[in-house]
Length: 174
Image 1 (cartoon, rainbow, N blue to C red):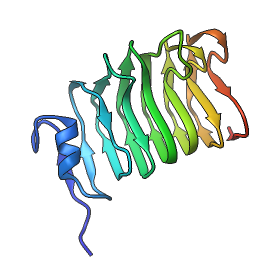
Image 2: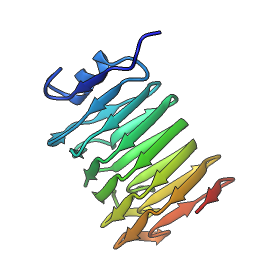
Image 3: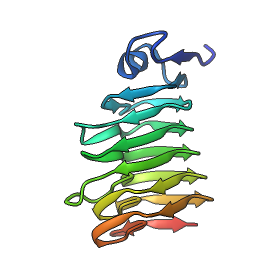
């Protein structure tokens, strides 16, 4: 069995996307500094970790994941043009992640949009996000969400769910 490797964006490759392409499932990608990039980790089992900020300006989501099992640790997400993270049909684990200034008032899910996920959030911060519904977290359906210690403040919606909006057959443990 090969052991998991650690890759660093900006050192091992010039972008996060190119660094992800080098990484194998089970590896960790370190993201420090300021990044303006649309990242897609769909179908991957990967950890994204560091103290960096991912600005998804111009993207539907700063980070997209569909399938796979993605862990995010310590990062900050901003995206005035769309969501912080769009996740569907897999696992998404967030620890000490900050979402600030994400979302659009005509879309649901400013910080995190989840569909068919197993979502875990631990000590995350959702502040200053906007959405039509669910400025912090929007669960569309068939999502299990377990949260421990996350905080929500100054999130605004055009309709409902400033902090959280759950629609259709979700299970939530807070």
